[in-house]
Length: 241
Image 1: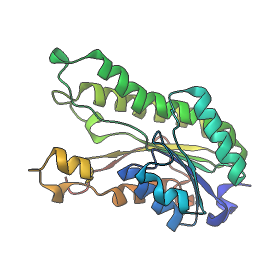
Image 2: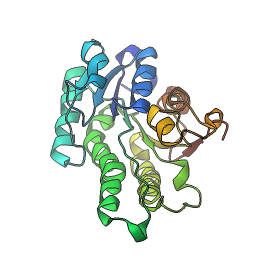
Image 3: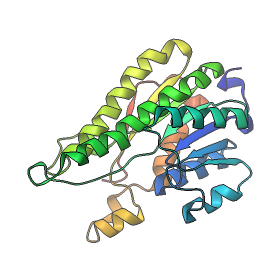
């Protein structure tokens, strides 16, 4: 059965990093649209951020999952598909940010950024593909970064390089999966209005930032029937910046 003929209430979205600021907005958006949602996150199940996911009957919480571990990623996707009867959309929100000057920094940060941003997305996609193929019209939406599409500033090298890898993963996977009816796209947010970014940039003009809900609405569109002809796209979501 294709996604186009499947009622929203029967559709299943898997959201990685679903306990973070953006992840929560994405989960809420899919629930409001009638989806059932599997939330995958590295945080433990008893973390305060997991409270809403633990009590919502339409949500399956898969906590303490390291998506960089291929076996863990496969087990999480298997659990989601078994619980809900399949997977229609994979939304790769999981990721991290670190600012560091290369001349004064540690190459471990580069390894960490590639693991958190690129490897986690590739691992999750690989694990979800068999289930998305069964739907014949699956959706993958990755989270890139506006900073990786522009000239990278000092200190942004590791983060921007890892997110640029997500952009190329998106384009390549879109070509790989197009014959299966699976679309693969990425959103490229500007600065997102989150508590962490407010704390890190207290003097910034937040009126020019994009909200998690605004990013989530674009993700929801790319996962919808209306976007069935869109694949391999890198969609900027800059707010008013």
